[in-house]
Image 1: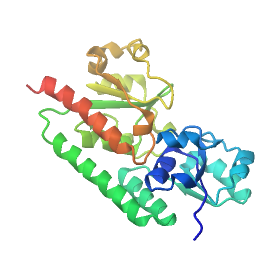
Image 2 (image 1 turned 180 degrees about the horizontal axis):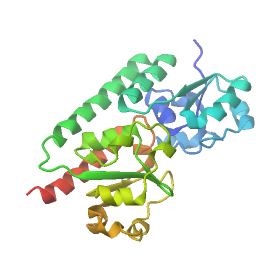
Image 3 (image 1 turned 135 degrees about the vertical axis):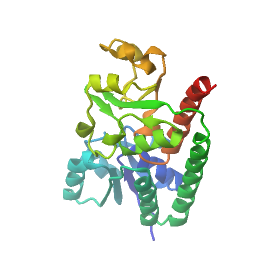
Length: 262
């Protein structure tokens, strides 16, 4: 079978293709694809929600890999233009592992995909085991966006729990769209998180802006300076790098617990 030419419209699909040994077959990417470094040499054919059909035609992919309902309009345009599209829509860790298997199977890399899933699961289990030994459990608030305030999606809530924390807005974790996870400032104050984690969808986290929010000086995380930015590729892209995000969150949680559990 001729090796397929692949266009990746999101960072996690590009990272996965390279990890499967298919980097030479990735001929187009989103501007947001940054891992691994080699992907930066691939021509940009899209943003996140918009695709340049002219650029895509130039690289002539056999298949386009997309993600989420946010790319639904782009996928419709691609299909109308005659492209073959696989649109994934994972929202949990289990769905993420399954998505890796699906892509691996589709691209004739089933065994390699299973190996990647196995390695991820081992790292997840190791963090879970260490987290169970923590002397205290912090309350954690994750902020995906600052205007309006948007709490974490399902897989982020899972990462927090696995890392040894308690997601203060876990009841919103099953809400698949961002507008369904909007929270009020007063709700965050009332939740009194011990740790604040933030990844503002591509723009820098500004702790000074958080400190200036009315009433937030009473929040333990703000009062104690326990506010931490997280790389978007480690927490906002549901793919291989989520385990990097998990390990990063666990280090933050473990450091906080060590200071308060003695």
